[in-house]
Image 1 (cartoon, rainbow, N blue to C red):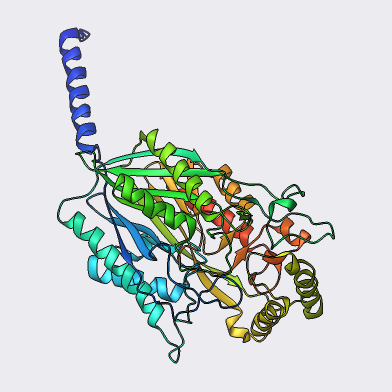
Image 2: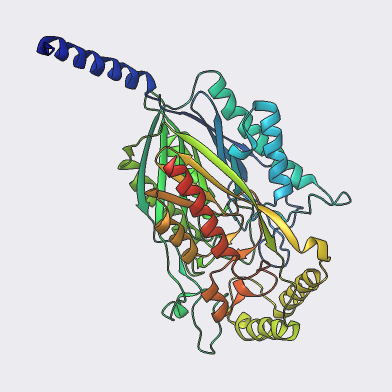
Length: 467
C-alpha cells in the first residue's frame, strides 16, 4: 500500500488558516474597556441638628464644606456596578439596603453590585434609628435622597453614552495618623487625648499608610472620577466650637475637584486602630491627603479595567451579651477619670461618657435572645485589576493588611463601613490589651468576628481570581 505524502505547502496553509481564525476569535472576544461616570449630591442639613461622633451630642455652628453623597457607576455594557460613600459617621443596613433596592428598581443596577457606606466623618448630625417609626427621619431621608440623586446623575451619563473610558491606577502613600492604641504609663491603652507627647509610647499594632488612587478620564482627557482609599480615622482636629464638616478626607476631595475637575470620592479603609493625633491641625490633615492624592494621580498608569464582578454575601454575627459588667464599668471609669483631664481641645467631662457607655451596655445586655444573632453584608467588587472588600465596620489595620497579604489580587483594598455598621472589629490580640475599641459598647460583636470576615473575604477573592 502506497503511503500518503505530506504536502508541505498544503499543511502550511492549513496551519496559517487556523492561526488566522484563532486570531479572529481572540479579537472578537477582546472586551472593551468599562465606562465610568460619577456624581455627588449635597445632603440637606441645618444648625439645629446636633453633631454626633463624640459619644455625647455637640452643637455645631456653620460648616467648612458640604456634606455629600458621592458615587461612581461602572458598566461593561452588560451589567453595572456602583461604589460610593456619604459624609456620615456610620450608616446601618436598613438605610443602605433601601438605597440599593431603589437603585435596582429605578435604574437596573443589581443589588449585589452596589457597595455604599459612610466616610466616618465626625462632623455630621446624629442619626436616628431608621427602623423606628416614631423617630424624626429628616436627616436619614436627606441621606437617602442625596445617594439616589448622585446615582441617578451618574447612571444617566452612562445611559446617554457618556462617561470615562480610560482607567489608570497608582498606589500612593500618605503619612496621616498612626497606630493610636499606645501603651500608657498606667498600663491602659490610649484612646483620648491623642497628643504627640504620648506619640513615642509603644504601639500595639501596625500602621498602613497606603493611598490607592483609581483615575477615570474620558477620551478627551477630562477627569471624570477619582476613587481614593486610606486607613486613618476621618476626624478633624477637635475644637471647642465644632462645625459641620465632611472631615479632612472629604474636604480634600472637594478642594481637589476645584483644581482637577471630576468627582473625587473617599472610600475609608481599615481604620479602626488608626487616628490622627490631636496636635495636627485640620489644614495640615487636608494638605497631606491632597498631596498624597496628587502625587499618585501624577504617576497613575493605565491598567486592565475590562472586567466587572461583584458578590455580596450575607453573614451572621453575634451581639456581645455575656460580659462582666463590673469589670467593664471599672475599665471605662478608670480611663475617663484618669485621662480626660488631659484633654484641652474639647470639653470632655468623664461622667457623661461613663454614663453613655453604661447605657450602651445595658441595651446590649437586654437584647432579646432571638435578636442576639444578626445578619450583615460582606462584599467584594472587582474593577479590572483592583478589588475592594466591603467590611461593615471599623476593621483594625492588622486585619486589613492581612486581607491584602492573602488576596490573589495584587491591588486589594478594604472599604470600611460598607453596606452596614456593626462597630469596631479588632483582631484577637487587641482584646488581650483591652482599650476603648474593645470595650463593650463601641465593640458589640463577639471576639473573632474580624478574623472570620478576613477568611470569608479571601474565599470570595480566590473564587473571583480563579474564575
